[in-house]
Length: 195
Image (cartoon, rainbow, N blue to C red; front, side, top):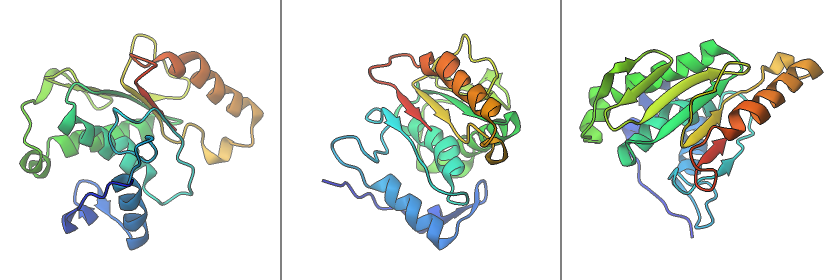
């Protein structure tokens, strides 16, 4: 049975993220707010285990999954840790910065009263932590993930569309996933992978 959650009109645009088209808004709000008891299309990371989102460009995949989802999870599970990778380090850090801007915004703090702050000892563009030990770490394909673990591994655009026809680039991406990222979750029985 789907669960429907109401959203206020201010979700349609936020100055930290940018405006959404009506098409983007309807698609993503529908996908995020409806879920079934088998764990399909869930918004609660504790239920989600494996998800592949495969739709065209311009539908806010990066904003929803790499920016808003980590921020949303911290409202319920402030100790939640995410490793967020992309084919380009610039994209991974761009989304990391957006998440950090969201969680430090007055808008977020007013709506989701939290008992944590960002930890000044680890508050970088590519890696930040809150005082409940929740973390968001930005990575790139081919970059080192050794030593880092999380409750979720997010691979947002793991290969550039221009490189998708290159066997060598595909192999590099597959090797990064199989050898580095597939073992980076804390508990493989409970934690999530999102591509």
